[in-house]
Length: 115
Image (tube, rainbow, N blue to C red):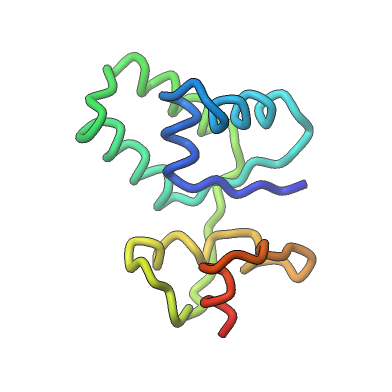
Protein backbone atom coordinates (compact mmCIF):
# COMPACT_ATOMS: atom_id res chain seq x y z
CA UNK A 1 0.00 0.00 0.00
CA UNK A 2 1.16 3.52 -0.75
CA UNK A 3 0.61 6.03 2.06
CA UNK A 4 0.93 9.77 1.56
CA UNK A 5 1.57 11.70 4.78
CA UNK A 6 0.87 15.38 5.25
CA UNK A 7 2.73 17.80 7.49
CA UNK A 8 0.35 17.51 10.43
CA UNK A 9 0.70 13.74 10.57
CA UNK A 10 4.48 13.95 10.25
CA UNK A 11 4.81 16.56 12.99
CA UNK A 12 2.48 14.68 15.32
CA UNK A 13 4.21 11.42 14.50
CA UNK A 14 7.70 12.69 15.24
CA UNK A 15 6.90 15.04 18.11
CA UNK A 16 3.90 13.39 19.76
CA UNK A 17 3.07 10.19 21.57
CA UNK A 18 -0.45 9.48 20.34
CA UNK A 19 -2.12 7.95 17.31
CA UNK A 20 0.12 9.63 14.72
CA UNK A 21 3.26 8.48 16.55
CA UNK A 22 1.93 4.92 16.55
CA UNK A 23 1.04 5.22 12.85
CA UNK A 24 4.53 6.48 11.99
CA UNK A 25 6.15 3.68 14.00
CA UNK A 26 4.06 1.02 12.27
CA UNK A 27 4.59 2.49 8.80
CA UNK A 28 8.35 2.64 9.23
CA UNK A 29 8.42 -1.03 10.22
CA UNK A 30 6.02 -2.15 7.49
CA UNK A 31 6.30 -3.01 3.82
CA UNK A 32 4.12 -0.02 2.90
CA UNK A 33 5.50 2.70 0.64
CA UNK A 34 5.51 5.98 2.53
CA UNK A 35 5.23 8.92 0.15
CA UNK A 36 6.19 12.47 1.05
CA UNK A 37 5.99 15.52 -1.20
CA UNK A 38 8.78 18.11 -1.31
CA UNK A 39 6.43 20.89 -0.14
CA UNK A 40 5.47 18.72 2.84
CA UNK A 41 9.13 18.17 3.74
CA UNK A 42 9.84 21.91 3.50
CA UNK A 43 6.76 22.76 5.56
CA UNK A 44 7.75 20.12 8.13
CA UNK A 45 11.16 21.76 8.62
CA UNK A 46 9.69 25.26 8.78
CA UNK A 47 6.99 24.46 11.34
CA UNK A 48 9.21 22.19 13.44
CA UNK A 49 11.82 24.94 13.61
CA UNK A 50 9.66 28.06 13.93
CA UNK A 51 6.62 26.89 15.87
CA UNK A 52 7.88 23.95 17.91
CA UNK A 53 11.52 25.04 18.29
CA UNK A 54 12.73 21.50 17.60
CA UNK A 55 16.44 21.22 18.45
CA UNK A 56 18.78 20.77 15.49
CA UNK A 57 19.84 17.19 16.41
CA UNK A 58 16.21 16.07 16.69
CA UNK A 59 15.31 17.74 13.39
CA UNK A 60 18.33 16.15 11.69
CA UNK A 61 17.23 12.73 12.92
CA UNK A 62 13.68 13.27 11.62
CA UNK A 63 14.97 14.48 8.24
CA UNK A 64 17.23 11.45 7.96
CA UNK A 65 14.19 9.21 8.40
CA UNK A 66 12.13 11.26 5.93
CA UNK A 67 14.87 11.07 3.29
CA UNK A 68 14.59 7.27 3.33
CA UNK A 69 11.00 7.54 2.12
CA UNK A 70 9.81 8.07 -1.43
CA UNK A 71 9.69 11.71 -2.41
CA UNK A 72 6.81 12.48 -4.74
CA UNK A 73 7.30 15.02 -7.52
CA UNK A 74 3.61 15.58 -8.13
CA UNK A 75 1.62 16.75 -11.06
CA UNK A 76 0.90 20.09 -12.62
CA UNK A 77 -2.85 19.39 -12.61
CA UNK A 78 -5.00 22.28 -11.50
CA UNK A 79 -7.27 21.50 -8.57
CA UNK A 80 -10.34 23.62 -8.00
CA UNK A 81 -12.41 23.91 -4.86
CA UNK A 82 -9.65 23.42 -2.30
CA UNK A 83 -10.92 25.06 0.88
CA UNK A 84 -7.47 25.59 2.43
CA UNK A 85 -5.08 27.51 0.13
CA UNK A 86 -2.10 26.02 2.01
CA UNK A 87 -3.09 22.63 0.58
CA UNK A 88 -2.74 23.76 -3.06
CA UNK A 89 0.95 22.75 -3.40
CA UNK A 90 0.42 19.55 -1.38
CA UNK A 91 -2.61 17.83 -2.91
CA UNK A 92 -1.26 17.38 -6.46
CA UNK A 93 1.45 15.16 -4.96
CA UNK A 94 -0.95 12.81 -3.22
CA UNK A 95 -1.12 9.29 -4.65
CA UNK A 96 -4.79 9.54 -5.61
CA UNK A 97 -3.78 12.26 -8.08
CA UNK A 98 -1.10 10.06 -9.68
CA UNK A 99 -2.62 6.62 -9.89
CA UNK A 100 -6.07 5.49 -10.98
CA UNK A 101 -5.79 2.60 -8.51
CA UNK A 102 -5.62 4.90 -5.49
CA UNK A 103 -8.72 6.56 -4.15
CA UNK A 104 -9.29 9.34 -1.68
CA UNK A 105 -11.44 8.35 1.31
CA UNK A 106 -14.89 9.85 1.49
CA UNK A 107 -14.62 12.89 3.72
CA UNK A 108 -16.20 16.29 3.63
CA UNK A 109 -12.99 17.75 2.20
CA UNK A 110 -12.50 15.03 -0.42
CA UNK A 111 -16.05 15.39 -1.68
CA UNK A 112 -15.46 19.09 -2.25
CA UNK A 113 -12.41 18.24 -4.37
CA UNK A 114 -14.43 15.99 -6.66
CA UNK A 115 -17.28 18.41 -7.22
